[in-house]
Amino acid sequence: MPDNLIGEIRRSAVLMTYAPGAIMDMRADGGPVSAVSAGLEEWDRSAPLAGNLKFQKIIERRLCKKLGKKYFRLPPVLEDGATKPGTDDLDPAALVARRFPEWLQCPSCEILRPASKWANDAGRAYRYCALCTQKQPGGKKVYAVPVRFATACYSGHLAEFPWHFWLGHAPDCKSRDELKLTSEGPGLAGLVVRCPDCKHKRSLDGAFGKKALSGLKCLGKRPWLRTDDAACSCTGENGNYRVVQRGASNLYYPVIESALDIPPWTRNLERMLGDHWDTLADIPLLQDRIDYIPTSTTLVRILEREGMTAKELANRFEQMQQDLDGSNPEDMRPDEYRVFTSGGSEQDEEFETYAEPVPESMKPYFSKIIRVARLREVRVVRGFTRINPPFDPDGADVAPISVTPLHWLPAIEVRGEGIFLQFNLRRLAEWETRAEIIERCAVADASWTVEWHSRNEDKPKPYPASPRLLLMHTFAHALIRQLTLECGYSSASLRERLYVSEGEQGMAGLLIYTATPDSDGTLGGLQRQAMPDLLGPAVEGAIRSAQWCSSDPLCINGEMTAPESHSLASCHSCTMVPETSCEMHNRFLDRALLVGKDDNPTLGYFRALLETE
Image: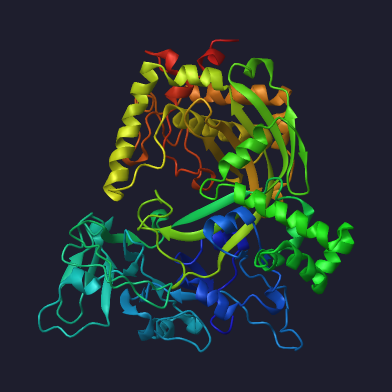
């Protein structure tokens, strides 16, 4: 694998797992390589949106408006054997990753050194121990492996583990390029780093403590970008600069904005305009726009295909602009909710829905059931956080994925199917205003308020941990878990999309859907579950499964939940789902709101389902 190529990953993984700033573990020619995915400037530099890649662009008008971008870019994919346009040379376009961490260890002799101090072969990304390789039969390479420790801060910065600070060399020690990390017992206490020169040694016991790095300040290292952030104020004393595991799930939380393609944005004409939208929008006068359209070869082809005149196209474009101006870029879900609850069916190329009758047993709980036969979702990565999940997409703790803002962001488009359920607003309003419900949910809201204000002193909470939110979110998880049994999808293939807002005219709906780039999202088995004879048993099965947990009575009494989850009765055995399926990182859950408790059964919104045979 020449030219320091370290492998291939799926396009969806680039966005959801390995977007700029994320650490990826690869094997290059058999050697382990750990690297951090580089920023967007490297995309333009190493895989420009031209030549073989010029068509790998997507547009979703509402998201473009919200994020202030002209378009979104798919992660680059080249066909096998693709050559540069007009030549026989292979196209070298590829994403860039920078080696991280730099410190590598030989698994045989346990020596610890920076990557530049290990043996290497030209054009290969791996590093190996020359001395240990010589001792192997046939000279089989003993590859140096990346250390599994790093440091990170709440602002998203990433740096090497401070080996020398942690070890504390003797004053006259000059050894800075070689240490030894040996395993002498179980756990961190048995992992000992020592200096071969001054003989100082120290175990890594306590390295993951909140204030283990007291005495150090974050230097604002951003290995995924070409510049560092010298203004970072995180320190070890404050606990916001700490040691992390290189492969830990809390080392990278992408901040994702997403939108469903809904009418009128799914019409053929809107999609065909593509890049010409901005050109037409820059022409303020209608007559000037009419005069310009015949001068564009692409727009002329659109006129011929649609059987339109330049004036008709200009008028249609004017209406499209008014539709876009009428949408709220800060919260696109009300528009989606309005389409789902309108009561009609839609048969567009990218959005196909059918209203299904609500089963008789479900009418007390739901007012509308929509079978979503086809949908398209665009997911855009705009930044990321480390250590803590993103509470506020615009918060100061969101790290950038480019040095300066660009006119595009990376994105993927996924297609799938799903089920939309609208709760019975009358019954929901009656249930959520009961004193015992409000009192129970106040515990979750109080912890949510404390955590929010500890990170955002001057900003109001984006939403309360209300009875409606906890109920609908928990039900979404229960239904996902049941649908994996009913229709054969893995739980990681299903995803929730919540439509929740307070008040009599607020939103109270949820969409359970598959949306993946592969065939798993187009099998048809999920949308079929929206049919009346299948949905009723599925909901009843979900509620009955939620009645008991293998961790009860601890779980139902809220003794299994972490304080930072703002949940009550919830654990991995009963309500939690894969992180990729949950919009809220498995927070704001309470099983008791679905089924009640033995000492207070009326807490459960669906309690009556359990009392029927």
